[in-house]
Amino acid sequence: MDHSLVLRPATAADASNLAALAIQVWLHTYATEGIRQDISAYVLSEFTPSKFAGLINNPQYQILIAEINHHLVAFAQIDFASEEHPTLGSVELQTLYVQEAFTGQGLGSKLLAYCEEIIASRAYWLTSNSNNHRAIAFYARQGFVQHGVTYFEFGGNQYENKVLAKI
Ligand SMILES: CC(C)(COP(=O)(O)OP(=O)(O)OC[C@H]1O[C@@H](n2cnc3c(N)ncnc32)[C@H](O)[C@@H]1OP(=O)(O)O)[C@@H](O)C(=O)NCCC(=O)NCCS
Image 1 (cartoon, rainbow, N blue to C red):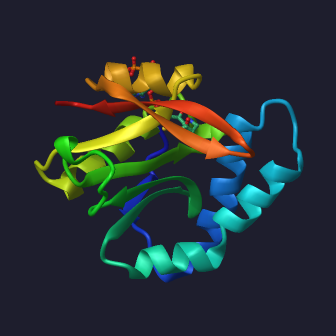
Image 2 (cartoon, rainbow, N blue to C red):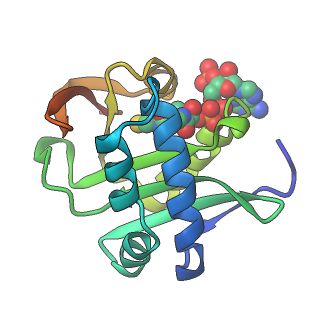
């Protein structure tokens, strides 16, 4: 891993880069058959600089970023007041996205460890698409176990997600 790696909380100045990286990673991970209208509408409305700026300014959320040579290469988003799985706690790791060229180099593990520093020793959970085998294998190696499933509604379809936590 490059020694110029910097892990830090996002600031408002990172909002555009976060939107661009989120679109790139989301499309690479989920738009595996190409682009269609509901996909483009989703990423262009969900991952906008103004939405990221709002999250960065909202104390309910924490966005942590990884930069290499002053370029954004990964980010994580934590929600400290999620109500979806109360038995697993109120802290949700909503996003852990590494740009494809930087995967498999320990970056996801480092960013996850940084998230856990910020989360301190509170319980937290996350969801991962059941077909996202790389992510599920990554989380299993990190000690996560499954706590049921949840469904992500998109384009009139439901997509199964595994609910994962270390507890
Ligand atoms: C899932 C994801 C976050 C994992 O991130 P990553 O940076 O590839 O993960 P890491 O490199 O830390 O770990 C993956 C493997 O890389 C390998 N690796 C190579 N060099 C390494 C190093 N220097 N240190 C640690 N692991 C290294 C290891 O085999 C490691 O596997 P292990 O856990 O058995 O040790 C990333 O693939 C990603 O962002 N995917 C797209 C978006 C996504 O699916 N996000 C999750 C949605 S819930």
